[in-house]
Image 1 (tube, helix red, strand yellow):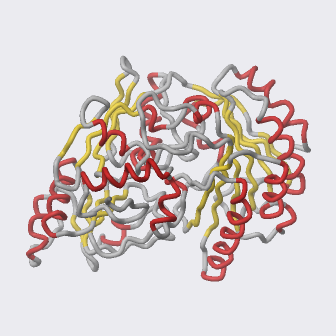
Image 2: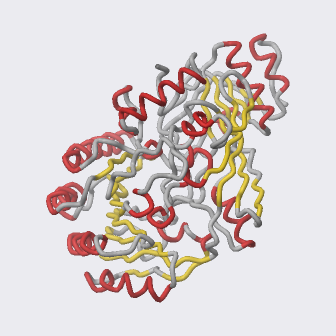
Image 3: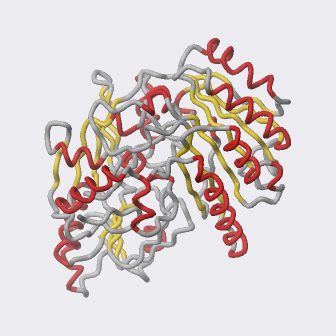
Length: 462
């Protein structure tokens, strides 16, 4: 316990078993820093929670002192700097318990998908991870959770069976479809607006191996590969999951040769069926344009990171996204104008990607939730690395231009986890339909009427 007791307002936090840090304390910077270094947090106090009891104590203190609260596990979604208030860091809570009989995992608040994969793999099971298993399970799932295998199995939120959550009144609650169903609804897709989740129980898949990887062509073949991929996506079964990506990779050691420092067009593949069937399905892509690198192979599900090859080291990132109604010839042309070879080799965005949606991602969850992206057939997202002020300005300008140009082909909505820096209320509301947003505001008024959970992609109480 590292808390000091010379400030009366902090005395109640002395009951917390984890570290309690304030600005100027030795471990403060490490405690507040997440994966996305673009958001530099400066809370008045940060609590390194080690258990649900620590979170209960922290939330009761916040309620008693009317202190706003933010939560961070890995910090992959840290798109908004947390100033003042209380930051609860759950990164120490990494326990994962697998029940092979029920094919479920009980996952603590700070566990990463890599922790789940490692625990589930000996049982031939796997979780519905996104493109990086370094990301936290809870934050990802609260935002709906768009898996690599989403077309085959749906959203991560669809597989949640229950939550343990501390609501802003300081109560530790258990919620599932039968117990406080409205709270259960709001947590699945509503992000962290109604409470601080201490653990969740999620279903696992009997899927020890998959067929996946990337088909890479030189950037000058981007148009040919994109046209072929767009046509191909209209013919493949729901189990075939894929994304088309433009990559402008820097010449740094973290990127493997021969991709390092190159301009690439890639189709990422994830197929959970028989490898021979997957190989036959992707044959047209391999024939569409000259293939420079081909990493598609049978792999352990725990090796999922090899498909999209996302950065594993912290960096300052600017991301954004848009849900697309369809991928028409006009949409393809606009995309290529903004991000393809015509945009130039010095285009500032590291990655611009179109994900194939539909399949299980379009079907309603067995238990209703707040996920609002089921009507999109495609999804575009981008990442830029904010290395220095001039680069940051160029990235911001390129991001705005890309999404302004693609807006006519969009549904008007985003996905909360990849929305990027949240703007005003109208901008934040774009992650949901008007009906779902209104319902979330009512739930916010029920569970957090004082709006303690007001940081990041926040919903205002009705």
